Amino acid sequence: MVEAAELIDNDFLRQFEIKIDDHLAKIEYSLQERKIFLTKLIIPEGIKDQEFSKEFLEAVFEQIQERNLSVVPTSPEIAKFVRSNRKYKRMLPVGVRI
Figure (cartoon, rainbow, N blue to C red):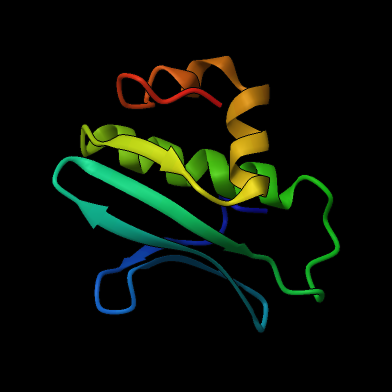
């Protein structure tokens, strides 16, 4: 589902966005130095696919990795995703544990 949609980094609103049908899923962030703080995950109720949030987060993390930034997940849902996906733990800044 995520592969068919385009992931957009909206710099003005400081959020990653993906539009599925008429629904807009987003991850709000704050960028400081070489760290990106992922603060809020918003998945509209109209998106019923259970795998959607996982695929959305994977796409966002891949884009962040390409930009060579460290990730600080402050949202509980995003922190849970990082804990369950070891390959993204290496993107955490030194000294940050989840």
